[in-house]
Length: 182
Image (cartoon, rainbow, N blue to C red; front, side, top):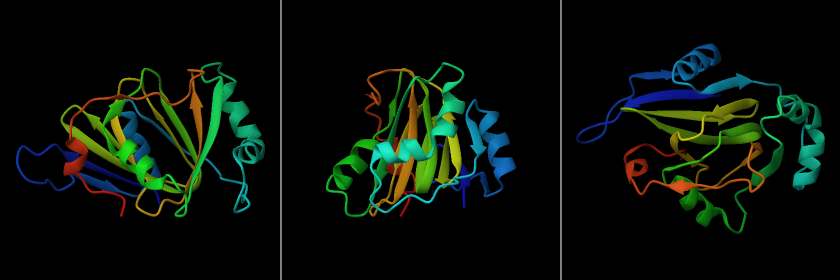
């Protein structure tokens, strides 16, 4: 189930969330008020256990075409991480470091879950994205992502940059002060 928790950035110690909700409408409203797009889409295809990226993209071709119709995100790929992925530990560490992108970060989760953490002003918003969640994070937004120690998710990623995922790490250790997916 999708969930949003909003934490004030603590000056000392840890903070309790000022908002915690699993209501998709409330999640969408709270994120929209901060410039983040959130929608619930049907994840209408059950993918085979070892589906390759090309098969994932083919299975969701209508959704991809709908997003790409605006002309904003011409590049698309699929990422699938499972508990036995050989690079899961290194990828988790890389994604856990706060970073920004010079383009929007757009994801459609078609399987599993992951935790997007957005550092906006004096708040950290943790969005547990589940199957069917479509998230649009504007360029320049400080954030990190946790896939957990035993990742199990598949997401379709949209880019306006042909190079795909390019991060600019902030060097801030803020991610270490907030809960992880596990």
